[in-house]
Length: 362
Image 1 (tube, rainbow, N blue to C red):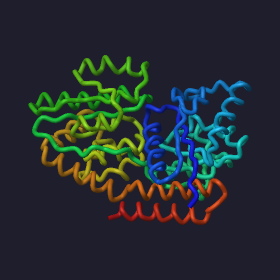
Image 2 (image 1 turned 120 degrees about the horizontal axis):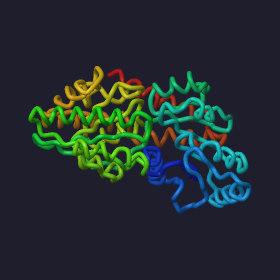
Image 3 (image 1 turned 180 degrees about the vertical axis):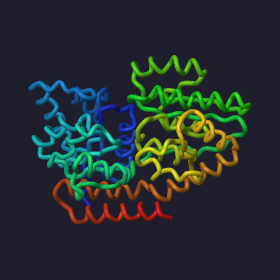
């Protein structure tokens, strides 16, 4: 089959969308296709001058952008996140390119309405909850939605430690981050006061300078360690993961932790219960407040239980969310967005969706 040229675009290359885009591009290259990533701050091709929510869309820059993308000669644009969708739809229109977009969170419905643009062939969602969100609040057509889990970068397998363990905390720069982070850190302090050896480690690689400045005093107050490493390197340094968020975190945050053999502790928000089976390969925090978090963390103190949960999470991730299946489905979508293989794309997506749904009911 003829290889494709796919251009992945993302607003923040350091964030979860950037991680997913890089993993997708790498997997596509391994499958024999040509794929590259464009984002602010990346040099090849250095054709985008935007930051989230803004684009210096003067005539001169628009012309340079279209020319730079045209020189790379992609077949399809794959846009990760709605922040950069508007300008790239204009590029696709002028060059006659197919477009696939990924919806990774329950984003602001007003911004996400850009996904209704008829130039977008498919919208990829990672969970059935986001599919329902896209159908209901955003108003997308059912036959333009594809349930495909995010592709994952290589993860180092984790070995459960002894009685002293580290809790890695993931959060995004969004309203409510400080309150959610404070709640988890208070729970960690409560567990420590009961005599259990637990250390809090906070991932700050997804936080911008302004958000980091507001988070640092909280970390100092609770003597928590901040690590700026990328997600795989961060996960290699912790024994379990907690999600600090008032809304659904991107699925790649949960699946990457599971692929690394780590149990995940999270509030049952959005599509999170689709990814975490409570008590099997993670914990869903029931109730509200610090005590609910502390109760869940105490359950993970037994390193044998952490190890069995981590092994179950890794096995589940390998069985349900195989990169090869996701690549086959994505390539089918790309060909459909080009106007070829439409029936094959629908069949491939339907098969992937059915397999994931069957796995959830087992």
